[in-house]
Each structure stands twice: as C-alpha cells, then as structure tokens.
Image 1 (cartoon, rainbow, N blue to C red):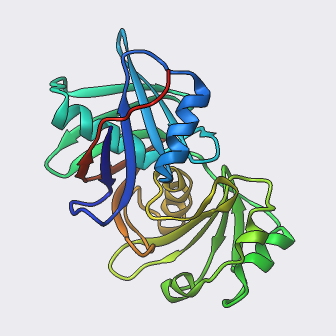
Image 2: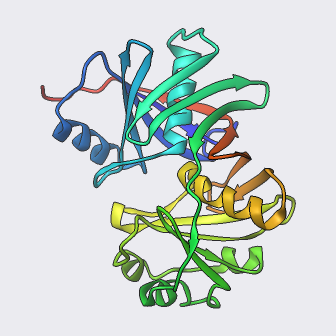
Length: 260
C-alpha cells in the first residue's frame, strides 16, 4: 500500500489517499475494512484488465462513485513505482472510463463533467452553513449541493454544523466563491461519509468547473481548495468532460497483513 498526497508537490499538503494495487479482488467487506482502518477520505484499489485497470474507491463508511485525488494518487503509483511506461492510463470505474496522462505540469485526469442546476436551498443546508456566516447567494445541485458566496473570506470563515449537513440527501456540500490569485476557491464537507472536511476534492471540481466556466466565460481555470492542508488544481472544460491537472507527493509505503 502506498500513501500519496495528491494535488500538491509537498508531503503534508494536499489530500492524502491510500493506494492498494491488487492482482485480484478481495471481498468487498475486506476492502471496506481496510478503508476504515486507514481512516483517510479515500482508499483506492485497482486490478489489471486487458486494456487498463479496474479502479474502485472506498471512504471509511462506504464505496464511492467518483474520487479525483485517489485517481491521481493511483496514477502516480503506476507511473513512479510500478514501471508503467505507456503514455495514458485507462481506469474503468463506476463513473465510466477515466484516463490519466502526465506532463511537466503534472498528471491530467479526464473526468465526466457534472453540470449543476439551480435549486432551492434545503433548510438543513441553510442552517448548517450559516452558523457563523451569511447565507449563500445561490444554491445549485449535482452530485453535491453547491453553495455560492461572494468572497473568499466568507468561504474561509465557514464553521458548518456537520450534524445538519449529514441529514442532506446528496453526498455532501461544496462552498465556493471567486478567489484571490485563482479563478475560484472552494471547501467540501461530506459528514455522512465520515469526511468532516475533505482537503482537496477532484469530484467536486467536476461540478464546479462547468459552473465557473459559464460564469467567467472561459474554459481554462485555476482553483484552490481552502482546507487546512490546501491544494491547487488546473482545470479545463472540454465539452462534456473536465480535465483536472495536479501533482502528487509520496509519503509512505507499507505492507498490509489482513485476513483472507
């Protein structure tokens, strides 16, 4: 197992993910137990297939449909530690085919865009985010709820009521606003998956990039996630796809001893 810090070029920054290469699948209950034991926002597992790899992601509480930082971490492991020398990695996932290439700018992942739609803010969202901040100026929904604010300072100052947010019907809540030195900033909360605040969230940017591209009138954007660890992403909207580019840093390599 490798532990990789994603969307950063420094350890102790970005979003940590565990990556477990497998020759064949272990039982699902064991995959979930490993993820729970790691207690990271995601543990990734992959198995070779004829034209790539089957990739799955597990939060401590459940398997998830899409995870950006653990995909970046998995690609980093393949390129840097497992001798993968093809120009592109093909990952088959619950969200379809995801591809990763590398360049001097880092690892570029092609994900499906998830365009959010305006919606009424559920009461739990309003209460959960307004304890020490103003109400969002707009609310949208896709995989997650998106709360739009007017300034980076408002997003930084949020101290959400996680019990309220865990009662929402979608995966989590993204708070976003225009940024200083970048096009937009965000924070992501998913307490129902035992992720109070995720350090850097690729799947959230699959929803944010279509919104900010339309709002700013540009398809190429820069983004920063305002968690304590922080993370930086280059983003591009290409029709129905989002390209997310970031770097990764190796923190640890371990051998797991688990029951079969």
